[in-house]
Image 1 (cartoon, rainbow, N blue to C red):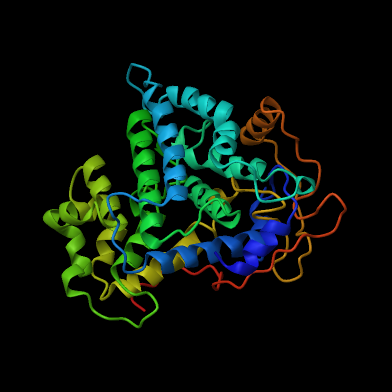
Image 2 (image 1 turned 90 degrees about the vertical axis):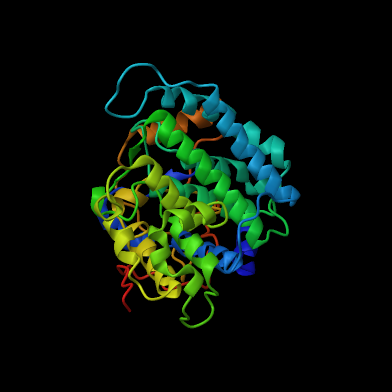
Length: 385
């Protein structure tokens, strides 16, 4: 990760994350927050790492293996929680039992796996922030759904582990193995518990559940630091060829995502996934990758229904202005089930409830949060440009 951001995080004070995006009028504040800029910096770093890399079958990196072990622990919890029998139009209620299991053990699972954090005791407990993003990575217990907001939580969790030094000497191949394991887990949960798409645009959306596989997978195919160049072996139209999808889905996250769509949806591809179908007509993978990033900024980070569920601590992703380090304005909080769940989790694990405004240390001094970042102006993905 960016060294400036890492240094800021390691000097920060940590606290239980709180909800800051309560209404659409909070979006301009989020778009100038240190939190969003750190997310974009992380995404940029990850894309550069995986550029022109194929996903190997496994990794030998010990810190990556720890994270994969954590993901496998979640998979085991799902395997031990069978779906309730009987037809259901929406998500299976056993998903709530599964969530209760991981809520009860999340803090212990992470702290026992990674040990003492590299911060002083007076800085607070980084695990209280890490655990919040970790729990947010596996769909909504209340709504029985999964979407790009939960995917965003996993990206934030991954970035927090990296910044705190729990992921060491991570290569692009390691990142691909980690995210592939996570996506495979989520696909299993979607099918097992019949999870609804969270905030889906329906047939006119890019994908009912995911966006990151398309960003990372397109980066895998080309050198994203270079100008547009054709890729004859992997022209965008190959996304429509079953034998190519079958051949590449174990090595490329984009093709893996397409393979899952083909597994769970019926009918012509251009009917159930029109945007992905239209993208096959784009000239180069460079343009597809740039378009996917712009679309992520606009349709994930730029949309209130998605990021309203993203919470903010004072260490990893603070609610402070990226330029002035000052706390951003807060609207009147809206009480919802997710906040009740968060307090219940904190109390159950004998962890402190949030007492300070996000972005402020107990002393009242604003915490650092500057970060050199990608342009975060929300723009729809213009693949033709």
